[in-house]
Length: 129
Image 1: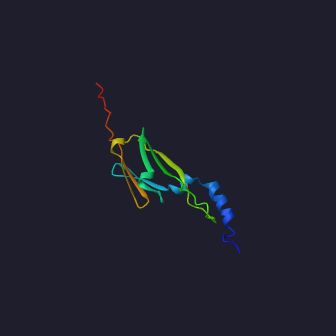
Image 2: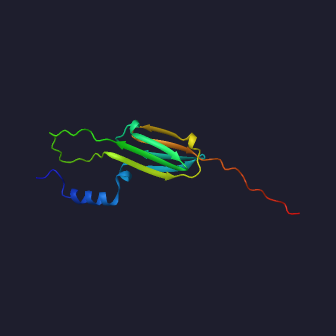
Image 3: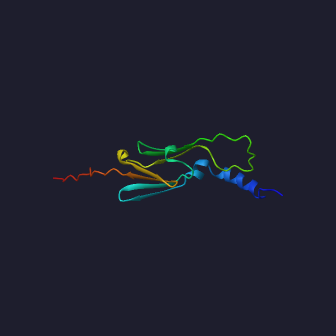
């Protein structure tokens, strides 16, 4: 009798082929509301200190890094699914107010608010004489 279901082998093969660890561990929703971009990203299993958010030239880069704990040599793992390493997502948001970006991390969810720059009316109609 095996502890692993029969379909396990093919499922993992296809899951790894079709998705990347970054996509698997950092799913997000992005929406626009009240002149701001709102990003809500699931980053389960990480602490606030493991996550960094950078905004540069209209790009928003989110990085989460988790170092592997010292492995106990006496443990005989049957299955290891928890992932360690560095995960990164990057989005182009255009012209934004980088100095006013706000980020909050609570219960495995990162919420980022990015204010868009106010567009200044530069168009002027010239009256023809």
